[in-house]
Image (cartoon, rainbow, N blue to C red; front, side, top):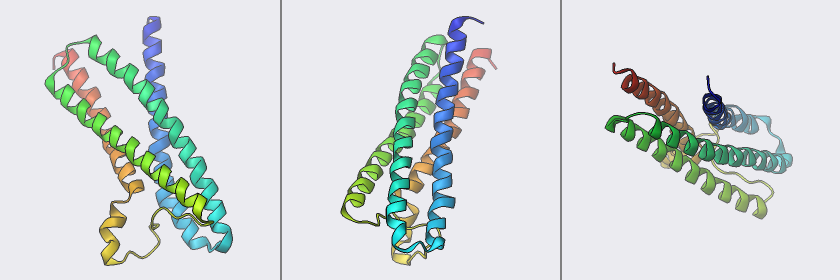
Length: 175
């Protein structure tokens, strides 16, 4: 193996770790942490504690976004220059980039709203938890919340990544 191969492996590893941290953190946040807040009955302590957790998670997401963008740009240019790429590869890549861009924009919007809410009140609340009852009127709003959409888009991006690897390997091997 040459030095460039080690570099490619490190960049792919960094990209994968950042994606796992963000999507895995989102799963934990939505399915464990937020419902636990609803059940714990922390009273007045909930607001400040949840605000601190939201800020720390937002900081982690910001780091993963920067990491994903930088490593993604490197990997994309490397892959597009390394072999003949088919229209199918370009299509799936475009869908993955669209999913990632949507995630970034949703995270930015959610982080901005949480920041504003945290400055205005002692108990910032971004959206209903999974443990809270969902009135029919707000059912769609709850299902399409930014946090849930980020998670769904992240899982779609993971699938599209796997599909890209398969398409690339098929194209290179000629199978």
